[in-house]
Image 1: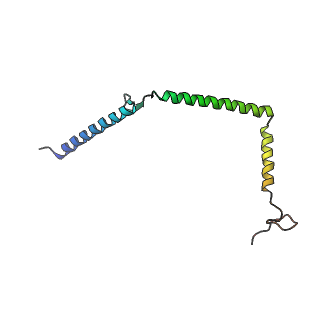
Image 2: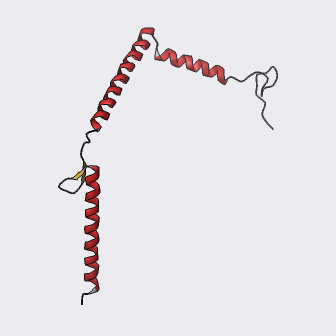
Length: 114
């Protein structure tokens, strides 16, 4: 009669074999191969070339648009410093308190809530 550890070893080997066969079949369906260390290597798909070409074409179009936008900005003479100052001026006007709201009349000081 077999000992209990031998039965456990045989069951483990059978389970390992079933899992290996199942994973290889599943990998084959997905086009996955294995390198010499057993790591999965994904083979390039035939339909992926069309997607790559579309992505490259989109990137080329976006680069062209960036060039046009850069040309517009430089031709109009926008200065980054001037734009920052303009935005700061707009912000300071927006952040300024409105007269009569939260201020004492005529003093320009804010009332403190009590």
